Amino acid sequence: MGCVRALHAWLVCHEVVCVMTFLEINWRILLLSFVLACGLWYAVTVRDRLEVQAEVSLNYRGMPEDLIVRDGMLKNFTVLVRGPKAMIRRLDSAMLTYSVDISHLRPGTNVIALAAPLPIVESRTIDVVGIVPNHLALEAEVVVERSVPLEPVFSAPAIAQAVKAEKLQVSPTSVTLRGPESVIRKMQSLKLDVPLESVVTGDYRVSLPVSPPPHVTAAPGTVLVQYSIAGKSALMELERRPFVDAKIVQSYQILQQKVTLRVELPEGLMGDKKYLERIRVVVKDLPLSGSGEVKPFVELPPGAHLVGISPEKLDVTKDGK
Image 1 (cartoon, rainbow, N blue to C red):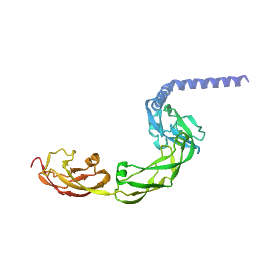
Image 2: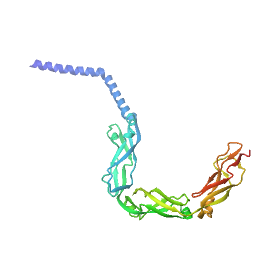
Image 3: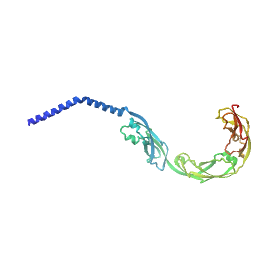
């Protein structure tokens, strides 16, 4: 029994001596392996790390039907991230989206915290440094509906008065508005602008879109407008001095000093000085060099129509040539 124990002790001592001998011989290899491992760790986690800003798109889901958000809804926010260069460059902007559940909104101010999107959160090598802004402040308000009458008004009252536009009617006579309670409760009617450009006598029927205020919808969105023009137009002869378009910097000379115009316009505006001053003769298409004939351009205000012009062409020279 003593011989067996002695043999076992000898074997243990032999193994220890062998291990120590191996370590003594290969310590340089172990040291080199340690240095390479440290270098690899530095290259992956420290040296090739970037800090960048990533734009994250916001998606909203679960909007309550009886509420509307009047303020605070952003399209995106910024996440400042730091990580290995290779991983940062692999971030796909199409995947950087963040879903916001707004099904639990209440009237008033609702503060909702923002976080980094899943591709960043699930990555073990990318760190989130900051989020700007880090929350949403959504101003929600109760949605109400109300029927209000339409108030059609000519958008060119001077012309409307001159031609005696009358019998202005709209169908339907009212619309249903849907929007924030604070806006809807102040609205007693909705103005409808009716553009009036023609001065020809007759009856008119036009479809016009309804334009409610922001955050408000109207049903129906288009209405039928009818009106009549009972006034008469008259011919008027005017003399105008032609001038060269100010955008053309070259020096030109127009031989004709006056151009005679025959213009049809509403009778009620024939004595309106400011209205008549808007009728002008402008020369735009000029010869590149030397002399030539050009056709003048006549600028007319709404409601006026050119019947004739004399002369129809003007003689123009450049730099006195």
